[in-house]
Image 1: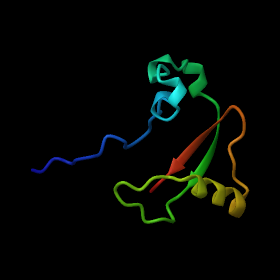
Image 2: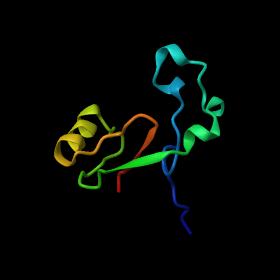
Image 3: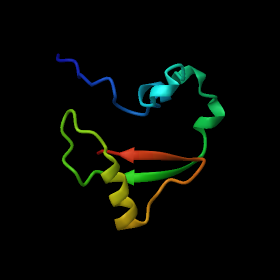
Image 4: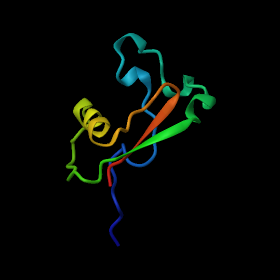
Length: 84
């Protein structure tokens, strides 16, 4: 019986600041306090797009949700993105 295969970035996850912010290379995931991971959330539904392997959520995608639906993440809120 074949085994299902998934990419490494599937499901619920937290990206470390070190992955995206050049001057915070020492800010790895284990250094994020647990209480920073619990907050009010804003959901972005991006199931309207046919996502392909390697596609990335761009600034434009987030800005378009704000323009079309008035959705934006505020201070101390967490963004949840549904890719389908």
